[in-house]
Length: 608
Picture 1 (cartoon, one colour):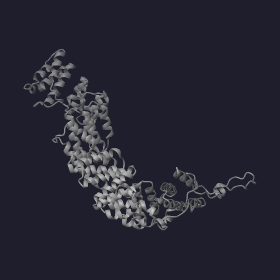
Picture 2 (cartoon, helix red, strand yellow):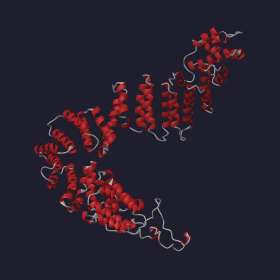
Picture 3 (cartoon, helix red, strand yellow):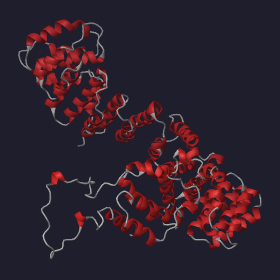
Picture 4 (cartoon, rainbow, N blue to C red):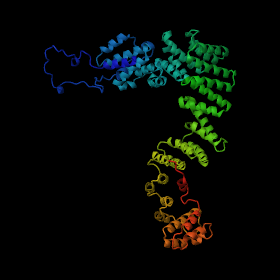
């Protein structure tokens, strides 16, 4: 609330001061003023979008000012003095007055208020974001309110690299993000700025530096720095315990951690418990299994910060040591989903992907339902690109072979939608749409094809997608739309004839199927089906002349085939259509569809 009030007041001070004649209050008892010159003849000050005057640029001025390198360089102003300067500032000095106020707020540890003023300043001059002093102040304010990752970014300008004050704030910011090793690398640079503070002001910086030293195994320097704090201080005892363990004094270290657990707040207690578990494991006082149990109990009651992330990292290491792949997957997945593994992310991700590939391999012995669950639980950790596609396709094929079409479709759809305008979407989209049709959901099949449409597909891929689209439309009863989708598609006559055959549109079927009639000779089952279907359609329409031409053309080829009797029945000269004869002959047509997999898709039962 206080920060919002300050921002509002600062914005209001951007209006012209009361001494400005143009904004003077009206005196209703005064003599009327002389006529005012036309507006075109009067100089009009530039105005911002908010209606207040635009202030002169300040970024270059601030960049030329001496930069803060020590806490004593921040201005020491009382609240009243700072506001008096702002209120009486002219437009050309208003930003400088604000800057003095920012420095005084940082010096007093009022980070939220300082950030509000900095935002107001930047709204009037966006170039301030490029200026090192401004970013130093921003970084300091962000550390004070706990926005440590944003603070690290603000303090990353090259001009601030060797600045002692910036290094001091970076130590706190980096320690706050959990990257204590990076914080340790800033300590030498930060020491002058930390030592220049009063003992009370020095405490948060000293604690952060101690964390950094402990992280790189320098326990003794950390213990020396912690002498600034009393023997009863819970946070100091927590760090003393860690430092003593790092220095090899296990008994005293664990004792200090126990004291921190007893007297500290919830956060200190949780961190002390984690450090205690680490110490017990390091000293082999507990085995890895007991360590995992304790870590799980800790995480059950404490979630959402670097303490939980530390517990998860330790769980992962214990799982690696005991070759417990499932436990390792659980810990790593939580780390990647909610935290940033930072330096160990690469090796951890590679190990997880290797394990997933092994556990999901067809010869792994992992039962199919369990394998599908593993993939779905950790799918975002799987490999990307062609390797990820191969892993997903192998598992999807196992699901498809088991008749679990919806599961297979959902699995591959996730893999498909991770791609963004990738040509590999083409074949994968055909596979996913086909699985949705097999699972009885042609609507999702169409949605998949439409969602993955792109101009970079080859003609062959576009034609494959059009055939699947036609099948989905047919399954939805939209025969005309299916025919339109096949317009100009090579081999489309085969799909069209299949649709006409299933809808008993005999005339259209004869026209389409005629183009696919095979040459007389060796007759495969699909070729036999094409000829026999043509004979059925001709018989149904009583086109005797074409039927006899068909008999003359293929009679010899059918003589030695199991379907010879059906061909003979269908093509015998007959003055009338015999339904019984037609029915018997149709039953004898080979089941192999002339359109192959397309026929299987058309046979699928639609549930929607």
